[in-house]
Length: 123
Length: 360
Length: 147
Image (cartoon, rainbow over all chains, first blue to last red; front, side, top):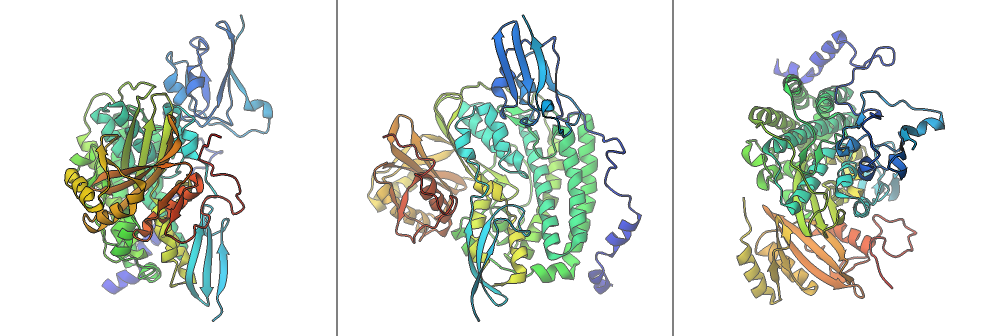
């Protein structure tokens, strides 16, 4: 018996594998369930953002850019290709304006999609 | 027999990361070799001096793709030591929990790679399937599978809720069964034993001379584990066994890592059981006063060493990082002598190489 | 689990090597001793033979902003706790006696220092390139030298 076990230690695993369902998810044909805290695309609440630039200062990857002329005239941009999706901007924002959504960031063939204007305020 | 020199790498199907070896081969025997590193040298130490302490947390996380959390933990504790702040107990426990989860994930990944190299694909599939359970936990609690961004200076970013704890408990009890099953197969599988037993054994003396750390040192009978010998809280309050094995060959390393996985599962359960309440962060200033600090942690591969010097600004003046793969690599030429050509993959896999770590 | 009786170690090193070694409270979590660079090999010998402490964690080199004309080199040892040996070298003569013959584990750290900071190590075989390209002919990349 001991010898049998030694010879066929993998046997139970192999038999088990015949009855197991595939572990992979049929994405994109089936929906992908992402956990609640998943750090996906960057979104902003334009009412809360004041253009203070704290998120830009702390961004480790240079994924955010702020063009600021005055308090009332600024443009906050996000570069999805540079972004490291670390969530530092969310932590740095004092007003809770910028955050990660739960959505995946898809690959793109359109260069214009590489710059996302988060908020543009004109005086 | 004629001696020939075979270059392996920097790009080679055997290697997951760029590393260059020149092996002296005579017939089927490898006589010796030399190493070249630096193909993924990113200058992170220098780069860190040009970033703020806050930005560096995320830079440091990208040193290693497997043990990212232990790097940020070590870095953050160095900064906290200079700042003189103590993080809340709950944050300490969550940091340790992530470290242990990472150890399970790293060891299972390694087991899969070893099994793949010896041609035992069933174990490879099983180990990587089980690893997904750990990654699921880490993704659900931190939001990232590999780059968790769990640490910040002064604590951790997220808190565990009821739902997380249930998921961790169910997945860990599943893992207990799976790891026992895998261990059972490893211990009884003649093919795996034939490929790993007696391959490139290293003596304890050599291990000490080469300053080796982590599972490789423990597999050669050196009883060292920074979690026990030089602990940061909460490891000084947790009880666990340090696994050692006297043989020092690839087989001993397999057993040590597999048993360590099981020990880490127990540790995760203990951490969840003892998890204190309270806050998970304290406020940390952006500027760090002048000072120097050294911190060490036990990563899945061994001792991670950080030296940090600050000059009073918001950027570090010097950050020195020593990862556990570097001493392991310095012993590689020694191990690559007097083995068969067919054993090269096993020796390389047995070390658990992480070239990106070693090069920084 | 403290295995370092620091005062005793400092006294013994001082007696055996006869060098000036001053302990100071510079680095957190670590015992620190400042020694002259010329005595490193002797101190290392004492450490290994007398105290059985030869786990070298790392070798750090750094330049202080206020002292740009010298390079500070720190050898970080460990035995249950960390113990560091700090020495300074003038930029004109960056030479240290190698400890690789006593401690083969120091090999990669010394080679890293040699390439990135241009420190030369005496008493060991020639240092083949480890990190930098074979055809590197620039000055050491991490060393900043003001002319």
